[in-house]
Image (tube, rainbow, N blue to C red; front, side, top):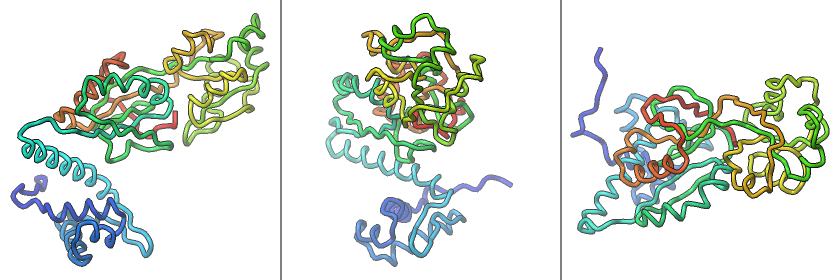
Length: 322
C-alpha cells in the first residue's frame, strides 16, 4: 500500500494555527483568547486536524493538556513553517529590506559559558541582522522542539537530523597549580587518594560515573572515589577547583584559557575517552534558512575539528547536563 499524502491545496491552515496556539498555551481557553476566536471554534479546528491525521494530537486529562507523541512530532514543523511565512511576508512588506531575525539556540551550560558567550559579539558584528536567543537547559532529552540550532554533549547514534561533530571529548584531571605542586612526585593513584574529588553529574547515570570509568580504564579500581562534591556542570566543578580545592575530571578544550593562563594545570597526561562529543545539530529543512546557515557555519568554523554534516549522522539525543 502506498504512503498516504495530503494534497497541498487542502492544507488546513486555520486548524494548524489552532493546534499551534493550544500547544503553546497549554489550554484551549487561553489559546482561544490569544487567537480571538471562540473556544468551541478552536476545539472544532483541532478535532478536524486530528480526524485528518487519524491520530490524537493532545492527551486531554481533567486538569492537564499534554501533547501526544504525534503532537510532539508535528509541533516543531508547524512552528517553523509559520515562522518562515512570517519572515517572507515581512521581507515583502519591507520591499526586500533586511529584517531582524531571532535565532533560538540551545547550548549546554559549560559550553555556552566557557566558549560561546565570550565570542558571540563576533558573530553579531558580522551578522547584525541576526539576534540570538540563547537557551541553556538542564536535564536529559533531545533539543527543545522550537530551537533552530543546538549544541549537545552526547554519545553517537542514528537520527534524521543534520549533525556536525565539533570535537570528541577527552577528559583529563585538572587542578589548581598549588595542588599539583604539593603532591609533586606522587603516582596517579596516590595523587587521587590524597585529594578531594570533584564530580560532574551525568543525567541518568550514577553520581560518580565519570570517575569510576576513569579509574577502571587506568586500572586503579582499588582507589576509593565515591567521595567529594558533585556538581551539575563542568564549569561549576572547575570553579571549585580554581578556589584551590579538589581535582576535577573535565574536558580540557572547555578550559583552555585557564590552562594557558596557569590558573589550572593538568598534572597527568592520562585521559578518558568515554565516547561523548560535542555535536552541532540542525533540522534538515533549516539548511535553506540563511540565518541558520550563517550561524551554523560560524560555529563550525570556530569550534569544529571534524565534519559529519549529513542527515542520519551519529547522534544520541539523550544528553547530560555536561
